[in-house]
Every structure is written in C-alpha cells, then in structure tokens.
Length: 370
Image (cartoon, rainbow, N blue to C red; front, side):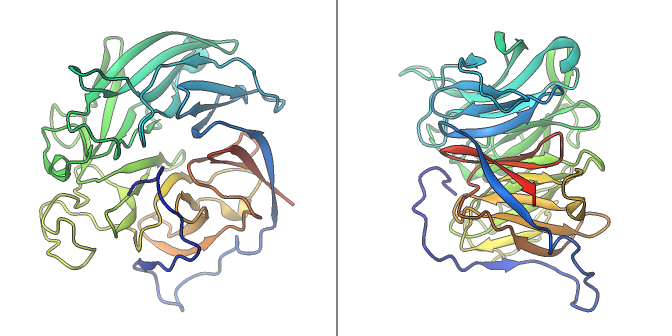
C-alpha cells in the first residue's frame, strides 16, 4: 500500500476480517465514554516518527528535509534541527523511524532509519544510523546497518525501529517492491529483524528463530510501523497490503505473514493459507486503509484505555482503538477516535503524562482528557 501518494476517498467502506468473541462473551468497553480534546502542538514539515527522551523532550523526524527536530518539555520548539542526515526523499523514502537507546541517559545515543542518496552506479539503501545527542545538538552519525534497494523501488521501505524491554533492537523493512523477497529468508527485505546491540555494532539476537540470522518474522509486504508493549513485551505491527488485506498483526518469532507465498496477490481467504509457519492477522481490511503508526496504551491520562491497541490509518485519517483480550491474541472490539476535524496519517506516541501525541503531514497534535 502506497501511503504517501494515495488519493483519499470521501467514503471508505471496509470489510474487516476479525475473529471476535460472541456478543454475549464480549465485556463492556470502559473506554467508550472517555471524553477528550485535540489541540495542535506545532506545525511540522512532513513529520514521520515521534519519540520522547527520558527528560520529556519530544524528538521527531522530517521525511523530506532529513532533519531530526525537537520540542522542549515546555512545548517550545528548538529552531535549529538536532541533526541533518542527507536523504533520498522520493515517494516513501526519506528520514523515517526514530528510537532512543535504552542507555540514552548514559550514552546520548539516538537511532534513526533513513534512505541514503544513491548514485547512477550505486544503489540507495535504507540505513540504520546512530548519532549522539547533547543539549539539542546531534553529532557523530554512524551507519550501523544497511539494506540496499537493488530493485530501485521507491515504496515499501518499512523503516521503523524500536527497542524491546531487554534492550534488543527491532527493524522493519518492506519488500522493496519484490514480493518474493518476503519469503526468501536469505534476503533482508520483507521482514522484521531483531538485533543485539554490541560494542562492535548490530548482531543477530540470541534466541532468534533462524540461527545466525537477524530475521524475527517474515512474509511481510510493508510493515510501516510496529510496537513493543512496554509491559508485556508483545509485538504488534501494521501491515500494508496490495489492493486488499491491510492487516494488524501480532508479530511472533519465526512466523510467516503470507505475503509472496501461496496466495500471492489474491485477497485474504481466497487462496490456500496452509504454507509453513503461517500466522493469520488479528484484523484484515479490504478495501485498504493503510495502517501506519501503532502503540499499546499505558498511561495515567486515560486509564480506561489501559492496554488498548491504537493505530493510525493514512487513508481514513482515523485513530482506531482496539480492546484486546487478556493474553493479547484477539481483538474484542474496535472503535475510531473522534479527532475533531484533524487526521492522524502517520505516527502516534504516548507522552510522559499519558496524553497521546500524533502526526499528520502538516503538524503535531495532542489528545488530552476533557
């Protein structure tokens, strides 16, 4: 699903494939009656990803400029960018994900994903870059991982990264426009990777499902974003399908999410789904909605939403709030938030006070209780 160049319809009717509990078994949703207000924090130039530093400052990436910018804890914006990384920003390329190192308080490391500019003789690559930040100034960018876009594709980059509760780094890469990449365990694209961070760089994490490989899960067309639950460690990803089958997935080690396999470009349920290690989605949308940023909510501002899964949709501009069962394997209900005339197209995160912060291409917004 192309997120950045879609023509947005006025009306979207989605066939949502889920496996809910029966109405008699579904518990009441305590979050249904929560009231809140939406306010603008700042204009922004195509922001893509958000991350809070431990001291309450908000950092974000700009897709087109290659700038990492910050908003101070008092909500004022720093005029100068933290750092600029020259990036190829064509279509879905650019400066994408951002994450703080688990030991940021000691080392000042911030990790980002961007598309390095290519040349006529050298393919561009999606790179994981680590730089050091102090007092709002970034320095010493180091390329820690690189995946060459040998297909020349401008879309399906994936490009997000997050740390888990044990300090391991996860990275999403789209299929780079070649569906067979997603099923090829020797190819980097079409996967979620998991690494150990060592003094020598990134290494495949111990305990990965394929020994000696960084591959954690495969068969993915374009997982634009994913999240690691800060309480349980469960991983959930937003998956952009073909003309159908946008998905929300519970990402499990060694599982195959189907893209590029037996059913190819057919819609969900129209082909054989008994290929090895197949993991069905929690939700499948047809027509597509282009799910993007995704989080599991834990915070003081909205206690009724505790443990809910929230995700944005590029096509509709909605934030969907999904109530999960106790073991986080099933969605019990799903409800859109009323964003009061604003849209969430790209990413969302939780502020230190538990309020929600989200992005659309022209600005950054906050949801607070009312």
